[in-house]
Image (cartoon, rainbow, N blue to C red):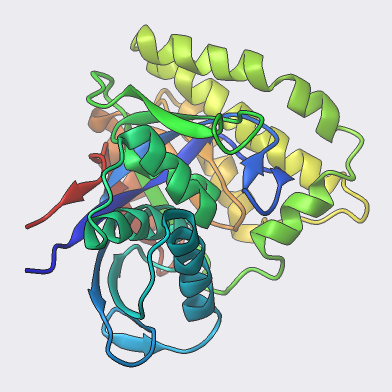
Length: 320
């Protein structure tokens, strides 16, 4: 029976924003993420008697997404000395407009399904390396809870590992969907352009210290310290985008309104923080007791806003 591999998406609390090697997808900085329970990808692979085929949510794909999938598979086939045409079927439970990188769960699940199909035995470290070759953030989706992707210096040393797969921290995430339009500047292009900022290298130099602050917050079960550091790191990333040459931003007017609302809530005694990736949508970090109040405030302030409440997700798994 064909087995289905499930991987959950993750949100970086210490951001990955820049490649040292685009072919190997080696990052310029280490990153730390939270794996999310509500967002995941299920993937299975079978042999094809004709051509390679990729189905996403039941629809056959023929464009860039299919090309990316099979370019990745061919790279893995060459690496392990295997061959054959394949049928890849993926079901993506990640809203495309939620501002969450579906590629993290997609390529983690694809790496796992590839190894399952060819009966390739790998440990989680090697699986993380394989997932990284498809999407950098996918390296972290091999693990549940909190994961760290150490930047490394080459293919062997750049991989993710679990910091705490079953965290004790009361940490909730509200994905605030403010804008459903595709972003004008793809992430890869944004990463390259951001490096023209005069503040990029100083930010890079802060990476280890900020990562350690976050690790200490997690080990101490300190929600406030985690939230403060996550918000700071995200705002630093977007400040770098604004000060690039030429400058750019993923923020829309409603993004700024959402940031201000988070600040107002915090000032009124409802502790919450925000993090934002390469897009206009905001993710709010909070504790369970404040989820209803924060959700209510966002619903009253924004028309037709969609809010999804998530918490910690598990690592990669085989469903059958």
